[in-house]
Image 1 (cartoon, rainbow over the protein chains, first blue to last red):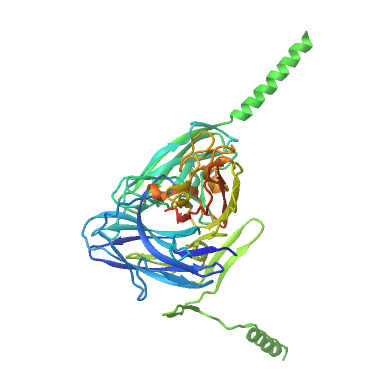
Image 2: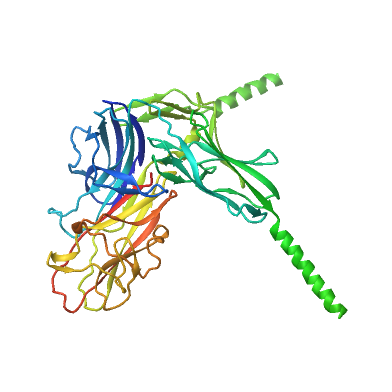
Length: 281
Length: 240
């Protein structure tokens, strides 16, 4: 059994805090390892680092939010022990004393302490985190405008036997983080050919997430059309925030041409012509 | 008479085939919730080509949301309920034993990650300081064969005369950071105010995804004798 094996649940929460609001969130920490672990909790701020949900930790703690633990026997930064197989609930309390309308991004960490008393030994240590995405302001239901960017369906003319994947990004142009709520629709001859829901990634303001679709198991999959595709013109539209005032549509089109079939036929004809020419000689 | 016999037999059969019905029962250290609703049938059915999850008779099925509170009613929600993140390290003590100058010594750590549905992960690593007896007596972090590796950029390190301490990571999530098993990097050094460096990441959810960390140390004949120590902090967070 492993020396360190810890589970933290949930892995992310997304909340909106009105001025002077107090929010509590319970986290379950489970020690699945074969020995006792000495742990403590902390909160760190982060910034988005890429378009795939990566984060970059920052020393900037310029936030009015006040974090503490509601557990009667524990504070942030204080040690607690978890025996093998033991589970503990940590209740994080967040107070928003300000009236500012803004977004804040933090990670609630459960950190391991070294076994050595002085804490300077040679033992490796681990920490595991759960993200907090917090919007503050008067509004309780904020929907930021999202838009499609860098949509890539090149080349515009496709072959019938080459799978088509639609790549792109969803950009948040608003002031608050927002979850992607949208779908991809493809039409042929004005009839619906394919419809897929977009994966509901969270998009941070002034940042983007890669475009992905939702599969039948509620998982992530690329937005793609299966082969063979019938030749002809296809039209598509990506619809975002369709149930809100910020509804957005991004139309696009492409052609499917039977390149491979035509090239094969031309090759066969060329071969036949070559053979006939040789025979006549 | 015959009809009566069939009727009573059918009633008896129905009675014997019944079983006790349990509604939902949730407990924690502080609360017990007895949920009054039960449905007619629900679950996960499958054939060679299809699988179906269903709930029949669920009261008010679907997602209800108000003021940040969400209620997901209907057994289909069981299948997207994975919300926890898990991190496993196989051992916490790495002991290189007695080092021989000019001969590289390696040891490994196996990191295992499980992420919640819909989320990838990133693992970061940072050393508290170089391997040292004290701050003036240390084994330098590797700069690799061509002096071109950094805490965020790996490079080949195979020479027996390029001394130092470094690491390589293999596994699906590490291929973007370490091209081959001979590509190494020095750890980001906390004592030099270097930020933890990403050593493995993926944008899709994973279950029991493994990453193998190989530590390598190579010392010169001039290296002072003694116990050189440091520790590495591994940080796992989900992709938001």
